[in-house]
Length: 372
Image (tube, rainbow, N blue to C red; front, side, top):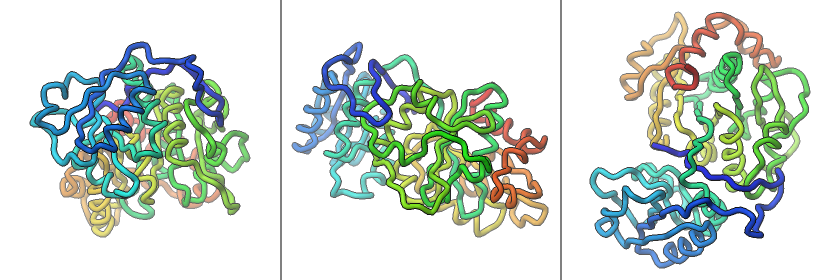
């Protein structure tokens, strides 16, 4: 599944509106197919595709759409469609209405859709997404890390993977996807490093210039990171459109983007759908394995693998957990003394330099194609 079709012809300020003076257009009109009999979705699609400079074809159902499905650059499917034509790729974007709620994401998972656009709110994002379709430059790879249960070590693992990739010469960004996690930056470093945090992107609209984006982020351990503030002060978070703009900028700015998704529903509904691959973290215990199984059922249709945090007292074999979840086992996080204290003191990068950690991280990155 490809989630990285992009064509960028303009940039805007980090918190500015996208240009609307016609100074950017797609190089070639993307061939877009809409499959829906819903009049509202049809009219919205016409308007959005016209703004994106694409060429729209419409089919009322999958039978009518079957012949043009695979030749289209982008396939849009309305929420009134419940099944796909035989042996056809999943739709690029599922279109639906805000009133349909979480059912849209469940339907998207069932159909194998790459993204979800809730209209009318996502109209501007969808127009830009369509204008970028067909780009020869796929951008960076996005790997999500999510804990199957609390305390599985997803944040620690994400930091160590980012550090190892950066040490290997891969331009890397780490994204804090959990607004309730207390701020990933507190585990990365004890220093107050200047740079933008998530609330600084709350008013972002349109495309973000990749050079500006890259230069605006704090850096530690050789990688850039975007964190929620490590303070108790109330903050205003970005909406879905701003998150999409940040993720697009990250792809254009870095070779590897690691996302600590967090176990909140918001992260699962947004950031997880931007990932090309997902690593599920589980502790080597029965209760954790059961909890991880529930998370598996909520994951978007992307490649996923299992990483187990084990110990000498583990009661369940890592391979057995992987088999029960139907996921390939990618590695076992080494037990390193002082991780809990290191998290509190911002010293995880020091622990990440130890040989067992580096061997683990490099192995996981190689298995995911993040390094060669």
